[in-house]
Length: 319
Image (cartoon, rainbow, N blue to C red; front, top):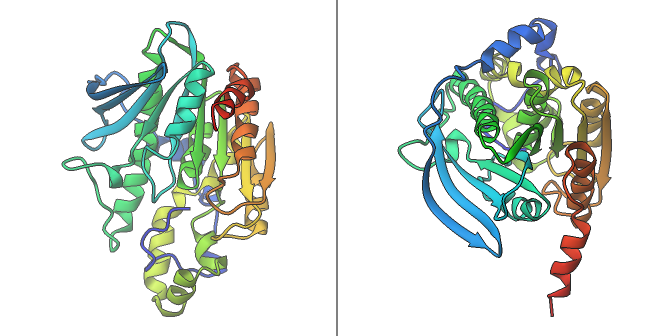
């Protein structure tokens, strides 16, 4: 999970409240509204062909802040394909899922991988002042809108089947996936990797040394202000409303930032249909089995080709 503004990420149990109790899902949904009629204004700044997979370095207009930098990865052969949007973890960027998107291109997928506002290059980078939790909340909401705009981009392509669009997100990206599954039913399936119910979960329960140190020193007033403002973005507010969108949860048994109870709380709050899988790995979820499992699940949900033969072919070339 992305660690931002450690000075705020400390709390007491009373701070960990699902804000959906005070805000209906329709009220929460309004934070992510935008004008779908605005031009995407897609610009390509780079291109590479990787053994028959086309990788486009692009940017497109954000309805909120500047422009969204992204990779568009597509098969080189013309056809009608599934679409996929990826959300990286908070410390990462659009490159996190690039190898996976290349694999999926060979399985019949057009993928979009975006950068979040705080990792984009100048002049489009939008930092999050730690003393202003409102700026954090607004950046989060803008990121979800930029991902929704990414769905617009895929839907506008003649080679994408708009009825077969999925989302894959890791850590912070899983938080966006929880929101998208509830507010945008164009997402036909969502994979939530290494996610948690609330950001307060980390501060309350993590034994990571950074959080332990800050738990000892931060004023309660700062803590309360942060969670009162940012709590509307917590994933647990949204996963109960994902249906009929199916969810796949992937969790690490050796998770660094949060415990099993928090992960179970998150998964149990989600609507059906859902599947929960566990791996003997850390927060990175860099177990090859995790990749294979989500690819097989996506095959069933949006009709991509099996990745097993593709991986076997690739392994056969290794000497």
